[in-house]
Amino acid sequence: MENTTQKIRVSIVEDNHFVSHALEGIILQSESCTIVDIFNSAEEAILNLCQTSPDVVLMDIDLGKISGINAVKLIKEKCPDVHFMICTVHEEDEKIFEALAAGANGYILKDTKPEDLISAIVELANGGAPMSSKIARRVVNSFREKETEKNGNQLECLSSREFELLELLVKGLLYKEIAVQLNIAQETVRKHVYNIYKKLHVNNRVEAYNKFYGN
Image: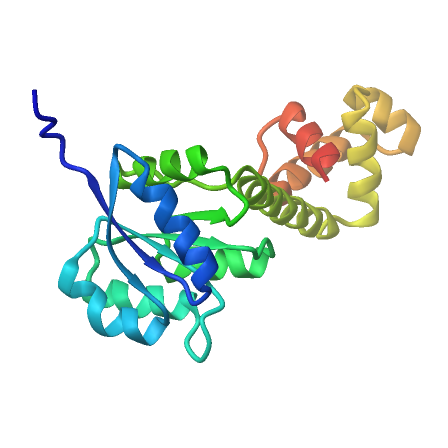
């Protein structure tokens, strides 16, 4: 019986002929994908890619005068339904987030195994956002660093007395124990705690603990 399953139509934008030939070979050996066209420059892709409307585009970053990231942004404006997967050697946070902000839907490295490349193309065509494990890890770490930085900035807004009280609070001391240790009234402790919770945007001791030790 003839296989009527429609293959995923893939275009390649890569100025290194060795790499583009290797990618082409991997895709042609796949049962789920087929090649639509191959462009050797960003300029060529910008002019012609929308005419063939591929499902997925494998886009290099270093393409000469116009980078792959800028090409994605320009082509997306004309062909918003095309899914772009950056295929590059770059692992820097700046490149990753620039590409995603430009409209790239996925980001993989050129040393990705052939079977993983095909899986990523299929995932992207089905609405996913595939990334190489190294790239995904960098994205997660970047968000963690930003959250830590945000927490740090919030802690910096505390007065020295509030910070001192917070340290005792997260150690588990009761209000009356904190009052004795700091030689202040228990009601003063309550007021300080209220102000600390308000500044840190937390509602209880557990959240304050997580905010403090998360930093």
